[in-house]
Length: 293
Image: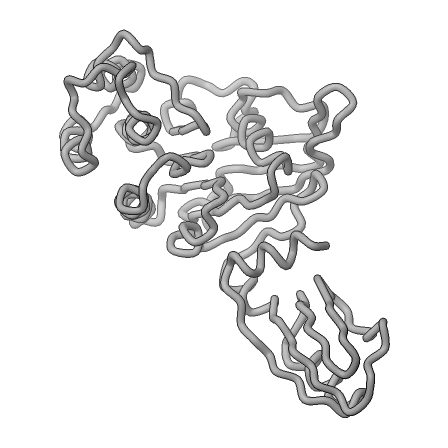
């Protein structure tokens, strides 16, 4: 059985009177690529910072690589890599100096890997950090997090400033990281199409809690869009469990459900003498539908 590298029970955090997270329960298994989704202000960054020991929880229990994140040992920190939403290197350093400075904190640093990625990602090691564009700074942040080949890599909006070609190269590297089944990646991003390429698990934050945490394939199997054409006008309440969103217009309706396994569509066909078309959804569509709840 794989190790659980991130673990939370009853996790809560607020800022002043605003409650951001409440009763969060989360398990991240070793060797997975987890996509963390949620609307702006849902608490994604707060959750990640709590589990990295950068914020202190109001209540709840947490484990990161088997340790209390607020008191992580040096050994555990050496197994972690983190890229924040906005990476800010020391402006007086060059790119190479930033990486050398970062590498000095780790007992293991893969210099050849860094050199190869510098070339592949079009970063000039002699450029000053203060002259880098937002996209170049984000690339530098990714390199700084990858150099010690962390067992757990946490990325908070890592590709927000990258162009499509750079995003593709970074995603390829993410897949390389977890190819051995022992390394784990957690990605929080608004670019849902990126997650669909690399994630095998999806966690969705809403209302301060995780409302979904399971494999991506299982989510796609469960959430469907149903298009109904009935023999007579449909009632306002269709009596369907697990409805995420519904629009009814006379004899026609479009609804998304979280529990379609064939039974819902058959029940609708029988009760309303209807024709029901079942449509698959991509991850972005599913996230939009679940955000309506």
